Image (tube, rainbow, N blue to C red):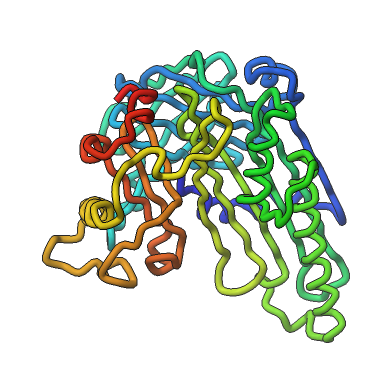
Length: 390
């Protein structure tokens, strides 16, 4: 779920095809289910189940154009993100992914993450998981029955402006979001949620998600054009650092849970508009598809903040390997972990996501604190526990 911060390293490879203005949008027909949409358009969301290295796993795949967003939930209920290596087509059409493993404070495990060679098709996923010190492990998954059907809606836009002495300013926007496969008037709550929480819409309107994404992407490109015009008017365009003349914007999405009438949507975003580095983040939307509404934490847990906070801090220490006699300022700005409403859940537990700069320095990235249901059992809401089979 944290791979969005790495995607911008691959953007130069995408920008080579930019023309003066090159706009593309693509979405599958909302009247088709995921499997038939994959066969007719090539863009789809699919949920698979099976084994990875002999261990049960559930995998979620979003394919849009030539890109893949993939994660899987392991037998312990933890979600593992796979970073798609662009231009990584291997023998027999397999694709190259790297597991994006969490890092403890001060930990350097460069080169130790597992890699996966996967053949991904609508009717199944096969391949190998390769660890540096172990024999390759087989991957065998098939489409999972049940869950809600979703389809990706996307918008791509790029521009390059010629006539500069030192460089050619470019801007690129890539937006991919999921919506119900058979979207209808009754699904307007879902669209409005995305427009408000992801696209920053101030007032509700009747525009489709595709229209809202198109407007959002075009606005980014036009802001870039305005900034370049301002730079030209000031007469300092050839003095500006090269990096400040290249703007990037990305939104990617995938489900990390899709069962029992619930859907947990993970939306990553990245933007660079000049400066030392881009900004990225991750928004988690926990959705009750039966009741057609977003969930709040009180729908899952009956727990007060005075009880929840030390529980989160305990698991934060475990996750980041901070000894009990050490202050939390080994990682955090303060010696306490504030609560957040940016949460998610899986078959094994509930996680809490903090954005860069929210509670810790940018270098620590997204802070993810995951608490298993075994530690939350006394506080689970009966209705949630019953639907989840806990």
